Image (tube, rainbow, N blue to C red):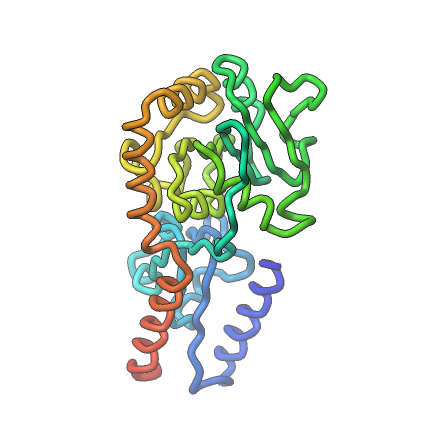
Length: 273
């Protein structure tokens, strides 16, 4: 759990402050935003502790935009890898379908509204529908909601549904947090045409017209238009799939391992401060 990890990091920072672990490096991989003292702070890691951390790995570049220049050099961007993607076989569906999954900050209601405008088969896989304001008794024909598949049964069925989809939609509420990245990197590795909300942190992975179509948050008409574009324009969908596969080269676990090893080697070659 993130709070526990941050407590461990704080423990090592404090130990180093009092002279322990003098010959050790502190390397932290974080998935939250570092901001100034006046803004949000990552857990208990205050900005005045950064000088005791040797390197911080972040998976989206804008995480450091509010830091002072003296701290920016502590951060290295390494893309979030698709940890769970393996040789999962795509679902053998009778008809093509759209897939959407995830939990936090999802706006499935706008996506379902879009499906009413442009009817296609849709699979939604999420932990729970309560916070998504989805009334399963009122869903249009062709919409299937799977609750808890990834979280209770493991990722295999979730990834199988994602891998078998014609289009993957990541509908996010308007947020400043980099939500939806796990689903996005998995869809990119599977070479899927993606529709996603414009959201902070996603620009490091998605480029409109190259590997995705971007829409404004909460705009069900824009979702419907984008789905229709990819459903009826094979050339556009193929181009986005090609862009996804090209992007995916740096999203594999092997690439992540390689980058981490480079960082560790570089730290080992530097003199201890």
